[in-house]
Length: 444
Ligand SMILES: [Zn+2]
Image 1 (spheres, rainbow, N blue to C red):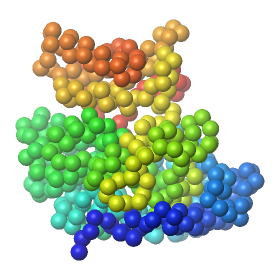
Image 2: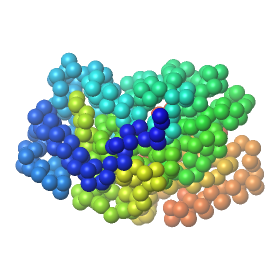
Image 3: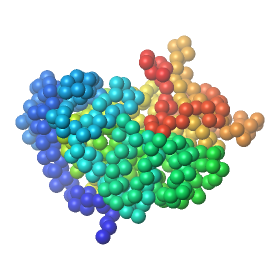
Image 4: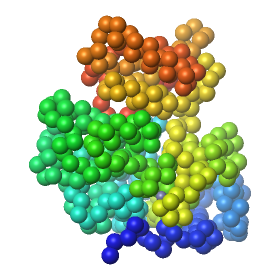
């Protein structure tokens, strides 16, 4: 018998029982890291916090926050995880690392039990997005040191899908294999989903609709919850495209369900997600208020994160979802990163807004970059955009005018437009890096 839920009991648990489960798991993981990891012991001691201080729900706020900087203690014995490791080194069965786009890469160990936990998280996500044993799922993913879709692969097997590892094949060969095998689903970043559609048209002289794809799972970038990007992907492939957000240090903690709550369900049986004010550590409970996402992974052994400050920004939704899950929803998913939400010419600016505008113009099928730099004392913001080769002369001028006006309306900023040749900007298979704030040192 199939149901809508992977785990009907946990996914529909009434809120009081869910809180009780979370609190017990929180106590267990706080005890665990304090006993096993010199890093956590140091941090807790420095803050004057003892695991025994955790007596009621509100006390969770007393547990010190973990930041990316805390992982700098890695690279020492037990090598290479150092003071973050909570199990004997011999118990570690797999290594992954973060991409290091926001600093030094973090080394992430997992035990075999952790790996089963990863698969369980992903099984929950896949099932909620209508992946079923009848699906043949293609993974156009490089199978490397980044965790990305590794757990998605094993979870596909766990729920009974047939999985096709795309491995080292190039984009064109991947697409040919997908067509040959009549695959029904795939997973990729929004940038790659669009890039694959572009390759179908330019290299294979075909229409992506001919591939017969029934569902696409996106991860790694916010695009699948940006309405114009979502629409463009869905129109290209002729099927629903749904979002998932996870992180190497945290696990696979959220998903968009088939009922489309317009945001992400938190897997609350396995994670505690808190939102803290952008400029302080005060807890946000009201819907609609943007805050930093702080996550605890309850059930991981080798290197769990307790109150990890992801520096990603989101807000709680005030609506519950009609799918019947009692798990809370983050409105519109992840809005961006604290360090990307910045002031330009004194106006609060989030790069995600630019993507929303650019993707709402069907004429612009290519890539773009945003560059913020200083011109004397003034901020200057520039959009480097690949131009459609078939639109020229007056028509192109008119199109650019409409784009700039739309950007001004959405961001209250005057952009300078730099026309780029189609195909001249980098294509990213994993995380796209489109925002360049040259005012900050060390940022390209
Ligand atoms: Zn739902």
